[in-house]
Length: 163
Image (cartoon, rainbow, N blue to C red; front, side, top):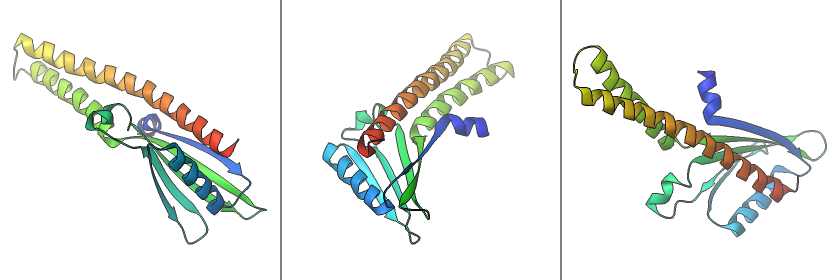
């Protein structure tokens, strides 16, 4: 199960020489000036900040193209000097994973029905094979898109904080 989790979640961490509040203000102002992002931020009691960033969905059909990666981050104040530990995770959107698994398991269900003798229609072989193949192709394409999105977000964050 850990291997599956690693496919859908990537982590990134680094340190900055500012307080968590200053970093969150800079991140929020930069993302708001760029536009097109949904940015949620929560300030914690122990001077840490939790944030979440994703691309805004302007039209329904953009859901399939833009809103695949969700960035979750935590800014933790380091007791030494004025440093902040930044921990960021990149996750794939739940609906995208649901689409992949639905195609894959539906196709496997058809193939299992054929193997068990419930239905031996030749068109069931084709339908089951197509659904499994479509699930695998979608999974590969989404993994590539996820890696590209992670690199885009990393370069954006690097640009904002001048790392």
